[in-house]
Image (cartoon, rainbow, N blue to C red; front, side, top):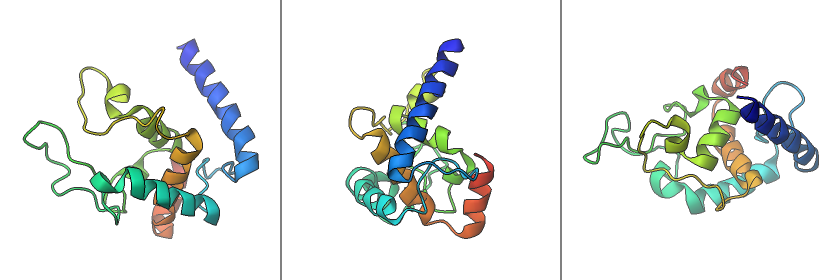
Length: 149
C-alpha cells in the first residue's frame, strides 16, 4: 500500500508541476482536468477523434446496449456524454482507466475491449482528452463531477 501512496504522491506532484505550465492544475477543488482551457480542450478533441471515437462515438454516444455484455462477454464502449457514467468517476480514476485500461484496474481476470494508452498517449494527452469530454457536459453534470474530486 505504501508503494501505491508513494506513486500517487509523485504523480500528484508531477501534475501540479506540469499543470502550472499547461493549465492542468485547478486550485479551486475542481480536479486537475483542464476543461476550461480552450487550447487543451481543442487538443483533446483531436486526440479523442484519432484514438477514442471509433469505439466511444464521434459525439461521445458510446456503443448501443453498452450496459449489456456482447457476444464476447465484454461490455460495449460506454458513452461519455451525460447519459453515461464517466462523470461518476473522479479525475484520477478516469486518468488511470484511460492510461492503464479497465482490466488492469479491476483485476481478477476482468476483460475489456478498451486498451490502456500507456506508451501510446502522453499523460498530458490523456488529461486533455478527458478535459475535452468534460467540457461537453452541461454545468450541472460538471458540478457533480467536480464534487467527486
